[in-house]
Length: 472
Image (tube, rainbow, N blue to C red; front, side, top):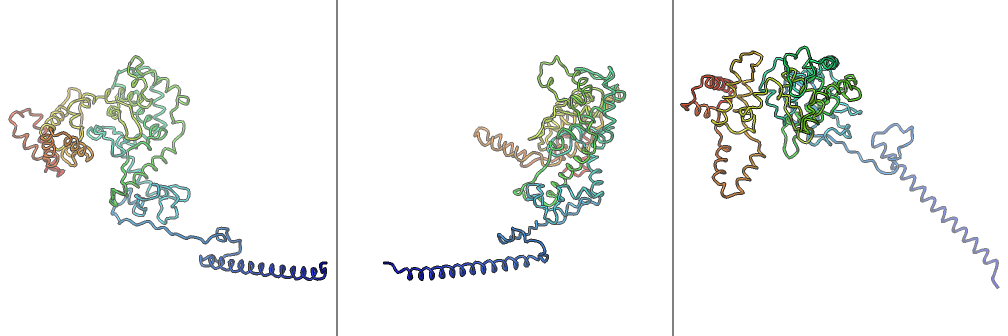
């Protein structure tokens, strides 16, 4: 028979021991929590947080904070002309463009020299001095020459009375739209097919068609995004000047975008919003053409070509262009303007072809073309003024070729043993190129060069090359 008294006594001792052990465990837990709280408080104080009136952030009570301060390397100071975009916008204070997180990402806005504010806007554009410098700089740029990879030589070669610039297209966009509407309401301005009438240049507002087309291209059709740019990567080891140049390109984009945002949205061309203009211009398209490219020509191209057919000289210099990796511009105003004979000539194709070292054959074809351009025409309106400085630099200044093209030619010639002679000749021509002085001397020795206008052109070219110090 069990002893009930013994069982009762044992149960009491079990409860006492269990309760006592629980008190010890609770006491240990409390001590640990108290110690941990003191440690967290010391960590908070070590961070310099003196105001603890509020609750401590949960991030500080769950894990120790990690503080990292990034300071981008500083590039050497570059001396820029006073009033230039680089000087007025403080590009020397910008972080290195190469290595800047994702080229304009704002996650690193904590950097002391970030070019962006908390909203992601350019800090430099808050300065009137910077905006003025950008305006002066961009207003003088021809939109077709904005960038470096597009070779629109005709816009540099030919000097115009009313050159195409951003200042021109931003001068009066609203007025240009009204002038386009006025011209398209009159039958004499509605030229069709390949018809041209340069006498209508003023009365049909030829320049307004080009201006209106380009405002829509750059402000409402991603023209800024599609413009050519120059980038230098880390492996290129860019100079400080090259690094600053990339920031300058981005500031140019930002200024044009800001200028576009100020425009009245009624300037945006759509077939619904501008149905009268759309129907009038589309009706001028050559519907009898068998070429799908002509039938599908973009609306802006049709406007630009109409400007050329009505006599706008700048529109008469436009040529179909594929912008690398981005967009295709399909206007061919040069076919309808007064420079059509020049821009479709063999001499022009030779002159503007991929650069090569100076040679007698190339120079002779170019000088023949220049002699014809310089010749006085029966109608003064047919005369062309060209830029001698551009001609001299284009023909005489190295580099004469693009490295990737040179490397490709060498590789191709090396692949065939029977081309060994050609390889030697190619290397001699490109590795040891003649200079302009040697080529001009070679031409002067030729007894068959007696055509007076050609000799006068040669003399003028030599004079300009000497003045520019590109002759030797």
